[in-house]
View 1: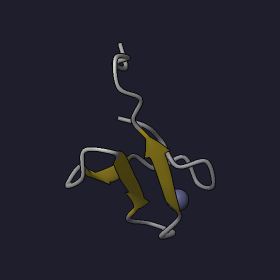
View 2 (view 1 turned 180 degrees about the vertical axis):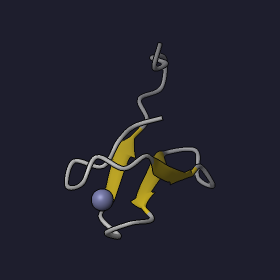
View 3 (view 1 turned 30 degrees about the vertical axis):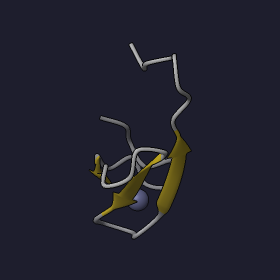
View 4 (view 1 turned 90 degrees about the vertical axis):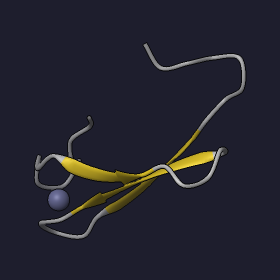
Length: 43
Ligand SMILES: [Zn+2]
């Protein structure tokens, strides 16, 4: 889980695609896109 860079709230994430994960803050609606890199997993 990551936190919103704007307000520090925990962000929901949408993992529908295999290439990106989309995080959305439910409080201020800030959105962050994180690209997944094949062969490397987030520890
Ligand atoms: Zn926020």
